[in-house]
Length: 108
Picture 1: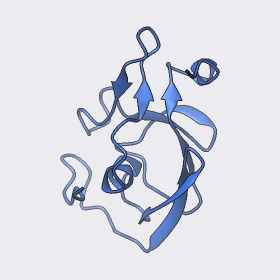
Picture 2: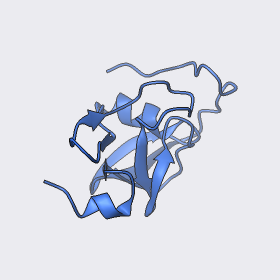
Picture 3: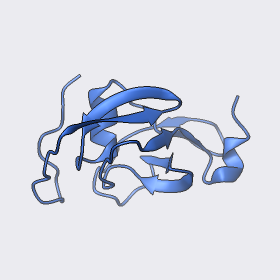
Picture 4: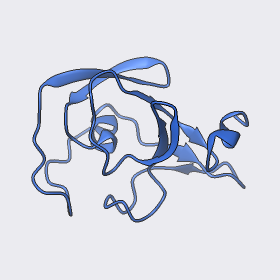
């Protein structure tokens, strides 16, 4: 997997120190300050959420915070656009099922 180095709308992001974060209970590493979606992509994670009606997988699409394809649950808050949300040490990132916490219980 390759790392996205330039973001289409965010200013040059400061790549901070290497930090650990949790994705669905498993520990991964990324650079502090880079978008969460970029850290996930670098770790081979392409699916961020599943649609409510058909449970179809979604991942990065627009990468500029306009669509909902990269939304995830971050530190317990649903619908966080991970393509524009900076990664911080110790974050807990979870795959989102549906459009809110209600969908979390609908995992298959």
